[in-house]
Length: 223
Image 1 (spheres, rainbow, N blue to C red):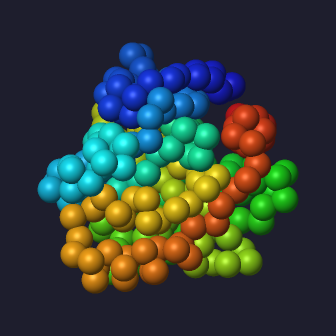
Image 2 (cartoon, helix red, strand yellow):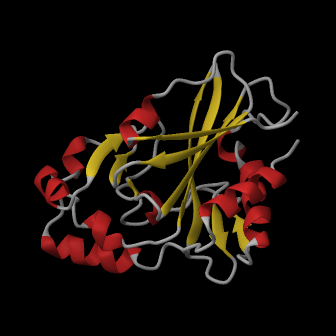
Image 3 (cartoon, helix red, strand yellow):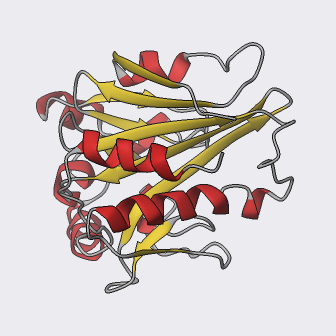
């Protein structure tokens, strides 16, 4: 089975609102946002964002249907790829904790083509003081970290699962500036300073052009 590819551009809110394919089928979606956006996880309250600060910083706020912490998507600085898998697919795994290990391995192979050495985290959920607030502040099973710097995440993932299949949402940061995200969260000055300091070293930036990395991923997805 091959992987059809769809390229979509829009606001983060529009892109996160799109339905699953009907009927469910394998699909890779490469998504480009039109404006910098803070994307909240499905269970995060809107109150974690200082709305006035977000407006002043030129950041929109949207919500995704998958769980986890907030993610900052910036045109040209963030690569967002969704991978859809139907429940009848041979790659489907019922265990949520192991559901996208295969996808993490595909990312590792794709990154290797760009000279970036990564590894799939196969352990349990690793939380920190900031992981409930910011997605890249923690580490989940199947996500990809740097071998040289295991504390730095390369590919963050979240999933939305249902009877119609799963949508695995992947983000790679080509540039990471925690102050831009943390600066619009509803924190007191002391918390904000601690968060920026702690989150400064949790991401491994990937400078490879997004198109090059997407093509490499497509070559390494299981057939």
